[in-house]
Amino acid sequence: MRELEVPSTIEGDENATEMVRFWLAHGEPHLALLLGMYEDADTDEEVPDELWAWGNILSDIAQHIANGMSQSHGYDFDESVELLTKHFFSAMKERAPGLEGKYIED
Image (cartoon, rainbow, N blue to C red; front, side, top):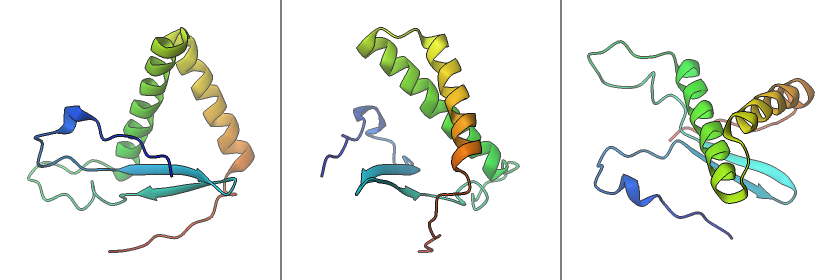
């Protein structure tokens, strides 16, 4: 199995939390997600909406993809973000709710 390295930039942060893992295996996507972290947070601050938080996570992932493609393949960052957004909405319309899975509680 091919695994990615944990970023060295998270070392030393005792609150570092893995939020998502994604694999392609047997020709299908497979995910592990940490859902409910934002709604379950023990804080004095107002807890953000879970879907709003995941929207931010997806945005961060898209921007990192665009930045990485810019560095590794010379793609234009803004064009990459625009195409990722276009393809995201297209895939959501064509494929959702076609993916199946189940929520596993600890």
